[in-house]
Length: 282
Ligand SMILES: C[S@@+](CC[C@H](N)C(=O)[O-])C[C@H]1O[C@@H](n2cnc3c(N)ncnc32)[C@H](O)[C@@H]1O
Image (cartoon, rainbow, N blue to C red):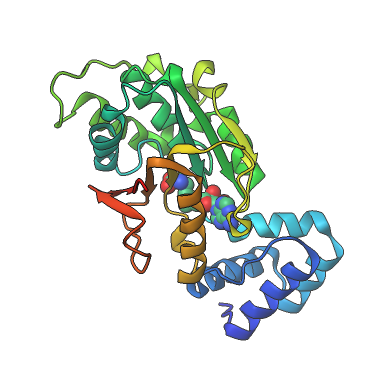
């Protein structure tokens, strides 16, 4: 069992910062240390060896950066949140000519597909502009492919049923949505494959939230940044939230993870709407 202490974590962060543009100095200590421990075990090296390898091999450094991040996600993750996204946010967007959405920290894309499916069911997808980003380019390649394991992901179908077929908010919605409308289930090859009209719509870009860049050159009506800020310390969380605030249209919505909130962030910038945050109009 390898244990990474504060000094080790600092040396790791400094080494990455020194030879790249990545900066993990404002990541939360606990999760970062756990990831470094895992990287050391998987690569069968000690910290000195790991740092040396990163300094000498830029491909290894990129891989290590990817290994630092946690990519867990699923289709319609936290189904109750999707009921509220429908009810509180999307159902009020019928009158808009266009809806621009940014998934910041999209991982392998299941969240992007979830919103696309929900918007399509509500007749909003055609006027949506969907943008998605992550630090890790491997996960975005997987997102673009939209091809997931079937056997490990039976929860996707349960979540789909919960959100689209067992809607407890609005009994007028279509409750007979066939999976095949959105993805192909190939049990023989153990795959769930998203249909092209969903795969081809989003624009994906590598964006490191630490640098607070918006490379999409547009403002957004909805920003989803779910289960990303938990890996940042409070200072970086507030910096990123400030940036999101500046990139939202007036009355635009910020959607965070189920267990995330704007604690400690100035209250005068957003109104709380259910689980979500709506940018106050000036
Ligand atoms: C746990 S996943 C969340 C995926 C999805 N939003 C969800 O809630 O299911 C966190 C994602 O944040 C990304 N991430 C971590 N640090 C980041 C950073 N500095 N900039 C952009 N993305 C980052 C990771 O690569 C990972 O894909």
